[in-house]
Length: 446
Image (tube, rainbow, N blue to C red):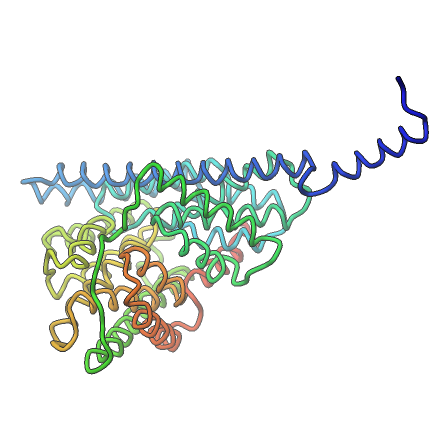
């Protein structure tokens, strides 16, 4: 039995209208499911990257076990190979990955964005970061994970053929946030990082995508890796009173050290002065080998504590299981600067947190009225905030990574003070300044 023509027409019209509703549109559901699958994929990549990075550090330790002088050949050769591969095979993979992601969020040309966030670059970022860890470089995997997450979601956006630039941008932002959430197992930090550092805003059009991606990445990480805390659990507390002197001292030390570190990296991005700059420009591979020798010297002077991410050292200080040398934060800071100057891919998140923990442990000896565990956390947040100049992100990351909500107010106070002090030394936030430099270099075809 057929329907009357008029009724059939009205029914067809209403079905077409219903199909355009957000909750019923097949196209909208395809995009949602694609975004969810992308967030899960980012989490899987972050977890695989983390496991591979841990294995690389174990293998590195085995190569040096009983043969510490091997580093004199291993570090120069490894860094030279990494720079050669970066320039010849994976051009554009150098650096942390966060400035590149920020730059991509400010680009409008899709072809240029595609080059910055290509899957080829993402794969190179992972491989070359692992090579750096195998060579003893003081680098982390968290920054590269942000670019890997952003590249994965950008590729997904192209596959889904999203019609508007703001939709593609929201996927890139979500990928970077999901990368942080999965790398540290810190979902809240992923959201805050996206707002404070990557986009510097909270746009209504992107908020739902970012939150969904972070939640799914967090669930995937929780299901596969368990409810772990990156730096263990810290029960430390800081009561009001004389112990709050630690807040001031950690903010002062962290803000100054972090500001100097950022200023050096920003200046280095503009070009090294004198003979170093000429050597880097003409012979980048040889310059990387010299940086490897410097890393080897710092590692031997520190007893091997400056190699790698610094994760083990930071965790031991947070849990009170080890006491590092007072020179550790200085040597680790120098090793991180040298690693960055060499031109190899790698991030600064984990090394910065270990440097901050070392600063806190050293200051704890000067403040007997404050629990040493609490001062270590304050040192971490003070230095990290001084480096990235993102005080809320720094607070949330340290709080989540140590499962310590009792220290929220002291951590936030230290972070905000360190941010203000760092800004007096380095006027522009590190990642923002590096992103601006990267955009300028892209515009001039460099």
